[in-house]
Length: 265
Ligand SMILES: [Zn+2]
Image (tube, rainbow, N blue to C red):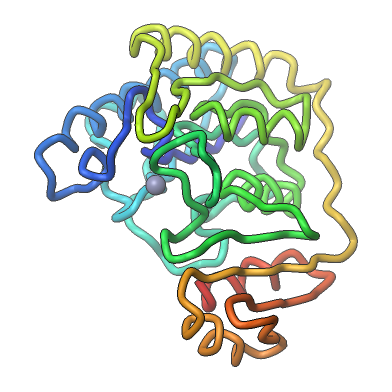
């Protein structure tokens, strides 16, 4: 069994401020270490369920957050960014049995995490077929494009609620509840226990999971905080300026959605 794990930092237990998510800042180290512990727990859950190959993508900011020397064998780690439109799930393909997401977070415009955003802090929101989306939706739909099911997501309360709305079959673990600029977190050891047990159990029931089908058409709307960004990005082939702050792109191919996002965000 071959498992893919994608890890972000803004939904790691207890994180509450950008200084804690930024490589050059002093407070960052605490959360970087917890991110490594949470990913290690996911690897151990996968190994207990019979995983023989594990690929981990470090998918926050520089892509250089996880401590490569702490991850258990046989986990392999992708660090940095290739520029491929699969982005946070680079190198994912149909040979994987399941996708697991650790440390994911609420979308742009959400009040459920002080660090809420989708791809960039320069956006008000990204809408897909009229609904605001999180990074979770982008990776889950990319996985669906490759026929790989998402089986487990850990992160803040906002992303976990969004996961349940998207697909009730996906197991979730809420690490943090955002309240205004504050965060109320469960104990970090509890996160470790629940990720390990949750991933193991999700993979044991993998045969019952169906990949949620993709919509047939995609209407992508990117709303920028600054109108000049909308004007400039509206020149991407096939894109249209909508009002003063938003760019519209329509396609029936998921790959074109994520390719477009690479260039207009
Ligand atoms: Zn991040």
